[in-house]
Image 1 (cartoon, rainbow, N blue to C red):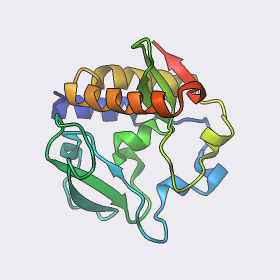
Image 2 (spheres, rainbow, N blue to C red):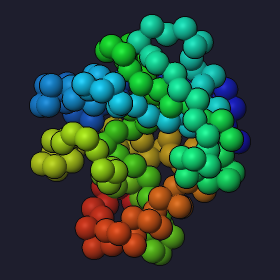
Image 3 (tube, helix red, strand yellow):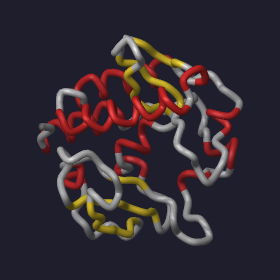
Length: 181
């Protein structure tokens, strides 16, 4: 399982990487980095990632969710943390899922680990995904390296495999591989 030391390492190696050389938020008005009208945008923290926060961040609203109600694998903790930004985040403290976006890990039918564009049904359109804007190689390689570390945690491997299977069934031919190990 990932330890607080692992999370510190992952945060350190991703602190300066970005999908583009310029601020990708200029393309869309930072749509994924601001609140929506209902303040419903947010992300789940990975198991143990909450150690990177003190709980008093003024820019985060915390929700505790039940694993089973949110359809996470049984290997995940019963109590999950869902965080929503209430204002612009402090970039150096943003969660890993934000740092990795728009990429997500995937195991294809041949059981090969790869990175693909996020396939979740998002309430906004990300031009990096919709326009297939080329991402920086350093960004892609760093995200891949992080996932290679993270997949050593069986809980994260469980959810990536579960999500991958769902994607293979739903999208099969439309999964675009951005990086493959």
